[in-house]
Each structure stands twice: as structure tokens, then as C-alpha cells.
Length: 200
Ligand SMILES: [Zn+2]
Image: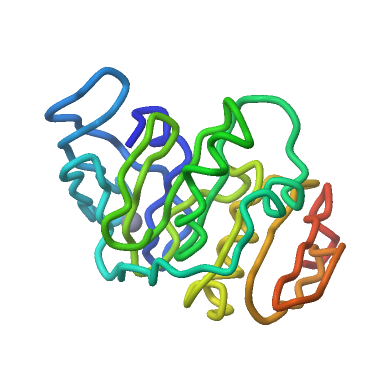
């Protein structure tokens, strides 16, 4: 994973959202190949092995996805380089194509299909609950079991920056701060409200 991704990760435990402290053991340029991420709040330690941060409880996602990378690149509505795009579950199978279609945007692959290789724009994490910080991603795309799990979709929506988009190949999740822009063919696209509504 990229060393800078540390700033966009949270401890997934059930306590107030906390940052993580990185202790790199082996680096390759800007990538952490081996090391640990520690939570100052609950003491949890996450190992980074082979460049992958493993929060525990993550499952490989099936490689098959009906997601069309070109369509996804349009749905996320991103222009210009910089920042991170979160790809959850089977959506990570589209990472190579999306890296070409969205130049200069780094991709975080959460529980990607087995055998997914890193490319120069991707970082991989494995987790039983999303470890992406609130308001840390320029957009999030979900497919496979994560997209069908409301807990995962809710956390992915948390991770999206206000005013930006969430693309889900799964059942709709109603949230007061999500405005649905498109729905059809097993996919929905929502825009997160620029500011959190009062009372939400
Ligand atoms: Zn913690």
C-alpha cells in the first residue's frame, strides 16, 4: 500500500473513528511492503504483509463482475488527477481499466478477488469491516457481496467526500444524505449531500 494511504485509513473497531499509526518495516519507494498499523485508541495492530494491509476477517471476492469499467468511470463523475477512489469487493476486478480511464487517481482495493495484482496506482486492503476513513475517498464503487451488505454500503457512503458519488451494483440503501442520480440494471449511483443534513 502507498504510505500516504495511511491518512485515509481508520480502525474498523466499534469505537469513535480513529486514525492509525504506521510503523513501516520494509519500504519499496512510496510503498509499504511490510509493517504494522496501530490504533492508539484500542491498541489493535494490523499487519501489512506483501504490501497488503490485513485488518482481519476479509474474504476474497469473486472475480466475475458485470461492471463495465468505462461506464463506472463515467458514473463516478471525477475530473482531474489526485485523491483516491475506493473499489469494494468484485469492483476491484475493474482496477486496471479504471486506472487507465482515470489517470492520476489512486485506487484502494478493499477485499479484491484472489490473484489481483497491484499496479502502480493501487493499494490493497483486506478487512471484515471497511477500514476507509469518513470523507476520505473521491468516490466509491461496490460490487459482489459488499454491495449486497447494507453495513458495507453504509460505511462506503461514509468514506465518500461530501458532494461526491457512490456507485453500487446491488440493492439500494436509503440514507438521508444520499441523492440517487440513477438506478437500473442492478446498479445505482448516488451523490452524497455536500453537507450533512441537520439531525442525520
Ligand atoms: Zn481501534
